Length: 379
Image (cartoon, rainbow, N blue to C red; front, side, top):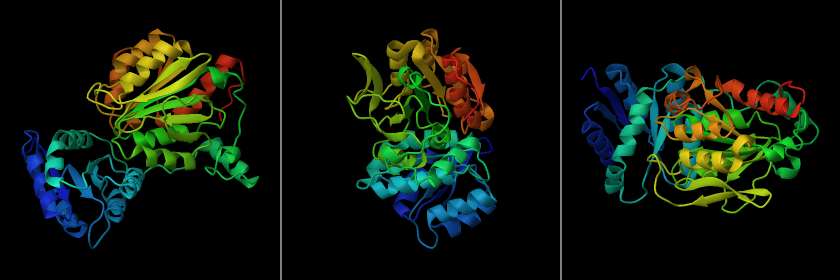
């Protein structure tokens, strides 16, 4: 047992506790050492059993799962996989849990819980494995633009702008990108830990940044809330990608959960393509699909960014992007929750620079301005 990942399951449903314990105990590399019906029981189990990972339900008696998570990450940070419901409110609360420091989440079905959870067995155990290797931090990063970006946002707000209220009043600032922003597209791939890493990049981009296309491994039902959350925080517009819409500067497009997204050329314009299809590298949406289109369609006008995540999705296509003339960045190991996807991209020779997460957005802006012969002072 000393070589196994030790898991405590926290859920108010006896059925769910039993199913999750069964799924975990079937794995040769992990074991369920305890199952708690509420956070107060879980608190004692954590003290006595010292687990490597906990799975945590959100809606429970005596103490809300989010309250418990916030206290846990403040007092005894450890890897947490949330078990959430597949509803709009469940999506919003799950995103809050990720903000508070949860590593990942599993969406349990609203009906047919028994069969549904068993079908999700591989997904659940893969997330637990990733969580066991994740870096957790005592205090999550604040959801605000950093450095000068924050000053610019505050300045714009002081002149009557309301961030997130609509495209006409999104705050602006910095040296205008001008024509450059219509030529370039930033492509971002991320998985475990990526919701907050992507947020960190996007909130520090100026309103006139090039278009951004993002594939974040996420199931159906969550990306709409995720995009809306980011749109309220960023100076660029953020939304789920819609099939056939034109790719515009100052906008970010997130692959809808459970759908592939890529870019195509339509005359002088780029357009978003979204469609169902078979999983690629076991994922849908897949970073590989997005990055392959970047290499083929955008070529030397593409900038690739590989953020935290487990596995190798997108690594080969990112190398194809670089061979086509793209300029690529990977998040460094020290700031990743899980270094798998950036490591694979680096090992494939796909990366021009490896940077800590807080430096990625400033470096993208700096590189874009240098290409246009603009001053390179950072936003």
